[in-house]
Amino acid sequence: MVRPYPYFVSLEEAIDLCQKTSIDAGSEIISISQSINRIVSSDIKAKVNDPGFDNSAMDGFAVIHSDTTSPPTKLSIVGSSMAGSIERHTLSSGQAIRIMTGAPIPQGADSIIPIEDCTVEGDKVTLNKPSKPHFIRKLGENFAKNQTIFSIGETMSPEKIALCAAAGISKIPVFKKFKIAIISTGDELKSLDDILEHGQIYESNSYGLAALVTIYGHEATRFPSVIDDLDTLRDTLNKASKNHDCIITSGGVSMGDKDFVRILMEQEGEIKFWRVKMRPGSPPIFGLWNGKPIFGLPGNPVSSHVAFRAIVGKWLTSLTNSKDVNNKFVYAILDEDIKTQAGFTTFRRVQLSVEGDTIFAQLKGHQGSGNIAGIAMSDGLTVIEPNEMGKKGDVCKVILL
Ligand code: AMP
Ligand code: MG
Image (tube, rainbow, N blue to C red; front, side):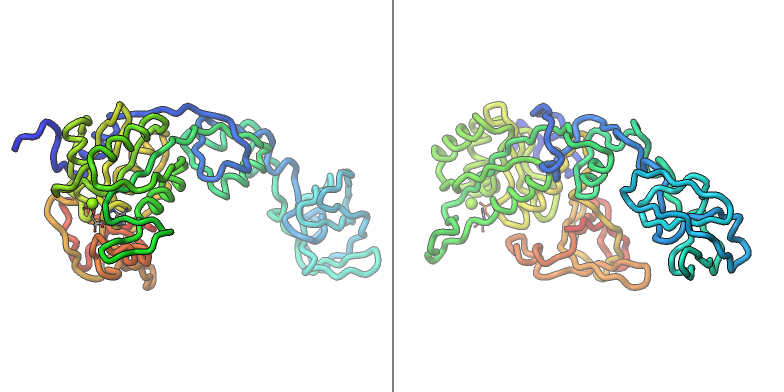
């Protein structure tokens, strides 16, 4: 059968095809306190130097190094510099100033001796070792005023939020969150409030997919799951497309008679590709519904999760010039042969262990694409490329979960 769209494409082709479709939500300025996982939309420059003044890295005494090179050295204590003190101290040869971590270095001092290396008697201190110049944290050594500390596309992490605050920045320019509708399909799906009858299951994919959307920095709306019915599905997609930037469905994209997402897209949507050479997760369909991008992900729980990370996440990060921070990876040695298929990218659930300086990957749990427990308990997903065999002893990229 000749199809009017690319069919059963490689994962690389699927990612490329998605990138031809773009959406833009614009940007906004938000408070630093609200910025976790948000994506910076323009470069940000530091408002201050860090440190803003030379200061001590230790509790001890500020001294002149040349006074201290032949210990023991007895010096006169002529003052105290505390963290937060705005008083400006000065010292000269033969003198020491008591100093706390973070306190400004007195003028004239060029080194610090930690309190542990001193004996204090009244207003005299005996230095039992030479002092250390490197215990001084120098003005601007971490970053300088006006230095670019963030570039467009960076995702705010706890560490970056703290850096922003240190740089005096309280408002952050970020890309607006894409509004993403999550719609599960299937007659068997019941909500968590329901009591299950024989043949029914809890609808679980939408929760995992919504959480993925959140960690990618966007906003998910979970719709109640939709029964396997063409008209109900059409109505729900129409509704979702009105006030969302993008739609993600799960289920109903395979070859079955009741796979209505695929059937509806074939009849009334615009398909950009259907099916991808990946294991698990080969059924995805991508296209437009009412002009809005729509990802039809598979219903099998592991497949939908993997397809999001492998395809949707890559697309979302490309739209905001970002690094795929949610797909951090390591290279590991395979501890056993992994079942692969020529031409397919293989994502198996593995446990990682470290021996010496080597990381090993071992299959974790039953690898069925319906087994959400298997992926939830794994450390990572193998990324075995289409030309790789996945043999014991091979080096393999593993995405950390
Ligand atoms: P489908 O892709 O619709 O053929 O569904 C494949 C498998 O995934 C079936 O066993 C479904 O019951 C299951 N499934 C589909 N959607 C969900 C969902 N939202 N949550 C949990 N399991 C699902
Ligand atoms: Mg189904």
